[in-house]
Image (cartoon, rainbow, N blue to C red; front, top):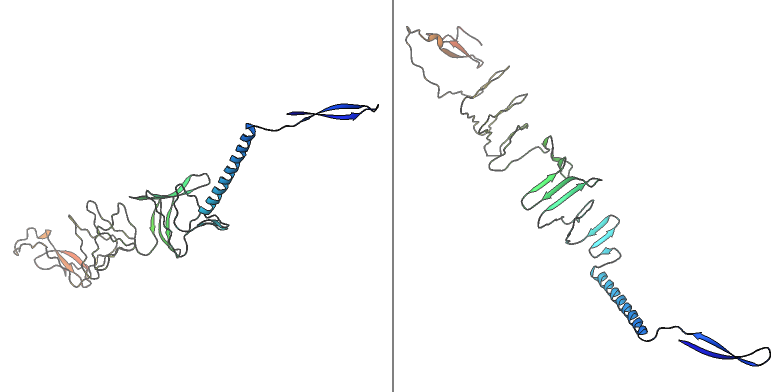
Amino acid sequence: MVREQYLTTTDDSGTLASVSEYIYMIGIYGWRKRCLYLFVLLLLIILVVNFALTIWILRVMWFNTEGMGYLQVNADGLRLEGESDFLFPLYAQEIDSREDSALLVHSSENVTLNARNANGDVTGSVSIGPSQAEGFGQHFNIISNHDEKLFYADGNGAVVGKGKLRVTGPEGAFFEHSVKTPLVKAVLNKELKLESPTRSLSMDAPKGVHVKALAGNADVTAHFDILLHSTAGLLILDAESVRLPTLPVGEARTSGDSQGMYDMFEVCVCPSGKLFLSRAGVFSTCSENQDC
């Protein structure tokens, strides 16, 4: 809108002269002004609603100077109280429970723990599922709270660190290959059985193999032959009596029947207990062929 205003002035001759001055007044009027006020009011409403939502979120999430609700932020890391649900992977260097409670990890499917190197490659993994537990890594080591090695396994073999490995299953233990151990012992009042159903069973030791039954019998059963062989030593049977109950009984021969006599031997015993063979005769020949 332009408004014209007339002013009277005097010139050098003293006569009055009218001077017209134009004053320009700029503004918004009409529906534009109402739209502007409505837009400002809408901005104020949005600002108030955002401020109210911010206050509500702060109250619901329990934000405070130490953290957010049960989640506290300190110099050592994050401390979370109570139970929490993680919908996505959790990356952490160390997870500890409180001193007076245990750390429980639950999942409806499986729980997987991965260790990665600087390039992001998985170097070790432990996965526990509903039907099986799997582990992946170069070494597997179990250490007690006294820094004692309980179990160690790698690509070369497995080592049991404690003094005893106890197998309590009713079927015992099954080994596809050799086992190295200084002692194989049964549970008290139970039998110890070493068996190879379809192959051979071998026990080797550089300084000797000892088989002891302190309160029972020691039975060795074979389908074919049982061989007791010593390369450079003695075979000692130390007992109150040595019995061979199922030996065949030969037929008696007359003194004149010398046929087949040279194919027969008699077993002689020295005072030291040594056994040797002597060719059989009409009478005993042990005294003639002493090998004590």
